[in-house]
Image 1: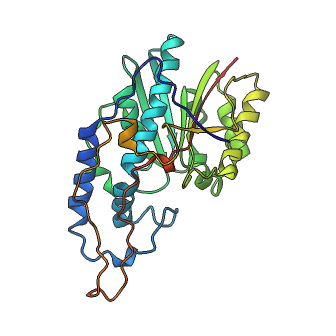
Image 2: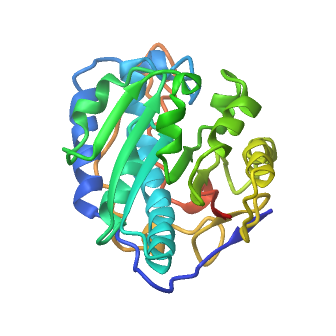
Length: 290
């Protein structure tokens, strides 16, 4: 079930306008040097496209600011829970991190909480050089999720699946990976999950994939008060503009990639309209303790 969630108690969410502008302008200025984009008319988010450098730029311009917004929501919720639990230092592992907007969301919202971020992705994201500079707490690894060591998983306090559960499930043994995570020696772990959705349609299959982790954790003596079968969005209503939710969200004007016109032999349908509403937002935060 997809539910509205507007609990603003505690730490206030921070959306960095300058970060959004820097990201969009960097990727836009770069892709404008790449020539005709008509060959990307039918490109869509799929594993086969993520290694393509030009597609990475299109992906960033369309999705990255909105996904960053969603992870800021999750980062704020995490910060409140960490504060309530007296935690001031954590290790984060993000699976399928791509251009790691979740890292920047954590960086901008984890007040007085030190963290080390380990981002894993099997694809080579050559366009990462277009992102703003990070701090020395960022470690990126190009490798399969199944090759992550047990030691690395055991050291993790916060696990992030950034709209990646479906892709990961196509490439690894999910029950086996879930058992590796559930064998953690820690007594408290957190999951920040976001799911692919369009127009608030719940992707129930991807949500159900998390049940592998939920069930494995319960078998290891963990419990949670958070519903693992429900997801949420931020806003007063469906299809609300992100800027109406938080004024810090400001997508630069004048970003046009490809205009359809009679002079073009192909009917260019490059997806150039950025996500500006909460219609792609679908998340959950879960805290497991024992």
